[in-house]
Image 1 (tube, rainbow, N blue to C red):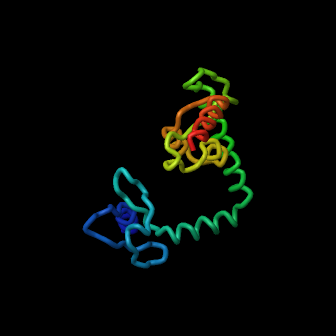
Image 2 (cartoon, one colour):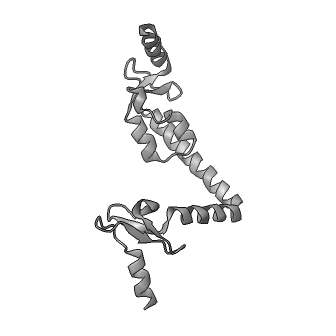
Image 3 (cartoon, helix red, strand yellow):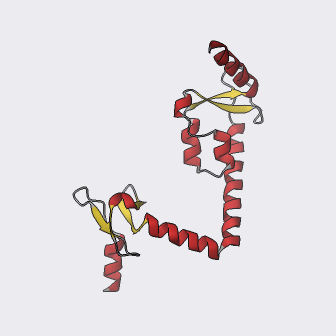
Length: 156
């Protein structure tokens, strides 16, 4: 019986005709936008609202600070390693320079820029978000990038 109840709670599926849902932690009725996706492809929302999840994560971090800081450090290190390997596979689209220390990303449209790609990678952002930002960019070496900005500034 309890298993059946848990199965039903876990399998709450997003339904466009239904506008609210009850959080299993605080038992408050909230709108769908108050819940994160548990499984977006299957359109399943989390059973706990964002506010309760935030409180839970804060308390968990406070009680497990050392292990959480280690986990964050390792994640950032892995993302930086991946990013450096990714950058090593690229070359400048203008001159062909391929040394990873020289490769930079120039945003084609500055209005679409969320953040500098290198800052995202060093900050531990997900690979997907870094790749999405890279897709808005041209790959250049630092010299070609500086020359490009020199020309852009001359137009102003």
